[in-house]
Amino acid sequence: MSTVAFLIASAVKVTVIVTVVLMGVAWSTWLERKLLSRFQHRIGPNMAGPYGLLQPIADAVKLIFKEDIVPDKAEKITYALAPIISFIPALLSFAVVPVSDTLTIFDQKIDMVISDLNIGILFVFAVTSLGVYGIVLAGWSAGSKYSLLGGIRSSAQMISYEVAYGLSIIGVILVANTLSMVELVEQQDSLFNWFIFRQPLGFVLFVICAVAETNRSPFDLPEAESELVAGYLTEYSSMRYSLFFMAEYANMIAVSSVATTIFLGGWQGPFLPPFVWFAIKVFFFMCFYIWIRATLPRLRYDMLMNFGWKVLFPLALANVMVTAFLQRL
Amino acid sequence: MFDFVKTVLIALPKGFYTTFKHLFKKPVTLQYPKEKMPMAPRYRGLHYLEKYEDGSERCVCCGLCAAACPADAIYMEPAENEKGERYSEVYEINLLRCIYCGFCEEACPEEAIFLGHEYEFSNDSRESFIYTKDQMLANRPTKEKPFKKIIRKVRRIF
Image (cartoon, rainbow over all chains, first blue to last red; front, side, top):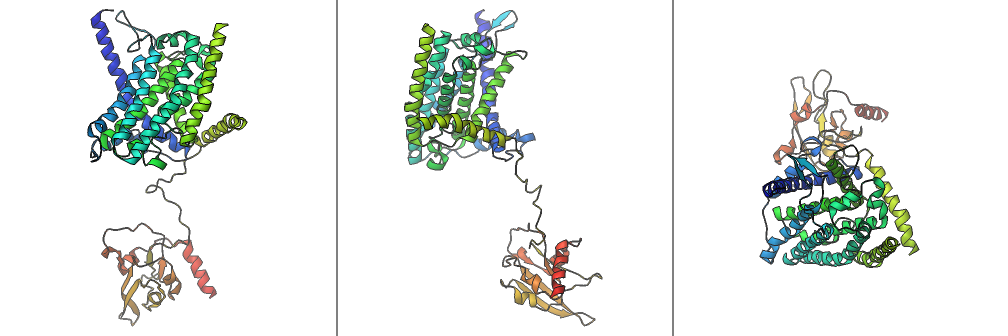
């Protein structure tokens, strides 16, 4: 492929993926509110447009026109940077997620992934972990006790689940013998080759850690509305506040995409075009997220630590050991 | 350890199944300004004054309602018409004082004042809550409501 064609293709891919992800972020807020309310016998947003579908636009307009308040005691620069630091990594992990099979346009073969890194999984895990810095810095820089507690909780929580999170994927890597996301998807060509069936425990551990990673209920300790006002979000307002929200939902979509790619066969599927299969799988994973939120109450702080170190970590280690043993046989 | 396994294998799927069942139930939300709750027949809302079939007022300005009113919300001035019948020239209820107890309705010997079903009468000035006789006559429901019959039956027994 010539350099010009490569540049054009990359630019188009980046634009399309960022746009689609941001749209997905906007409407996943709608999806969450709608589904959650149905779980609780409510109707949910239904005034803005049909089925309340224009609600995200109304919310965005409202948030943009709100006053941007910076507390006197805040560390101004860090305070302004924190939302950006938490938002950018959420978008970055889409760079290595293959959304479809290789397309052929004008005799050019185009990979439907922005960059086919040979260490794709490692990149995803490195980048998604960075999002925690945004939360910790936001909590520390706001100069409020609730924010600080939220930030501390976030860092402590991160230490507890991140080890198991990393280990949960090693089983898959041992079986697949690759770190590239594209090759991972190619190996899951039939239903029983999906890694969810070859690594069931790894999948369960991954899902639990992913929920903790994205600060979602039941591991939403840094926010914890009922205890810490809004945790690290307490002092934020206007667009900076919404950046954190966008980061949360972008993270959810990112983790769903990664889970789909690693465990649920990525774009593989019969009849429908590959990217449709990918979208369907991500959508169901998002719904599962919301289902979890509707079902489970928030864990206590020490329970999460216990759970992370005494249950998830040994299980992940055992999974890696058993998988390695079986691979050697 | 056994407890933990029990939690994971039994309680968690049970919880998820419960919430999943509730996903398909009908929402209980009432879209208030569009839909309204059916009122109880004896609900005590905004007052209205009843008339005779020929259109003349039932109220004779006896003052019993004002005497019965525990909130002291009723003010009236009597007058006489050309046939020598008493009627109320001024009849005002201060809706901010009124506690909607229905004593005026019970005290009335002429079955002139009733408490209707209307409950949406918020306003933005205190003056507008002085509820005059013309408003009360205009507020009369056109259809005879069943609850009025109940009250009349009770009256006949006494």
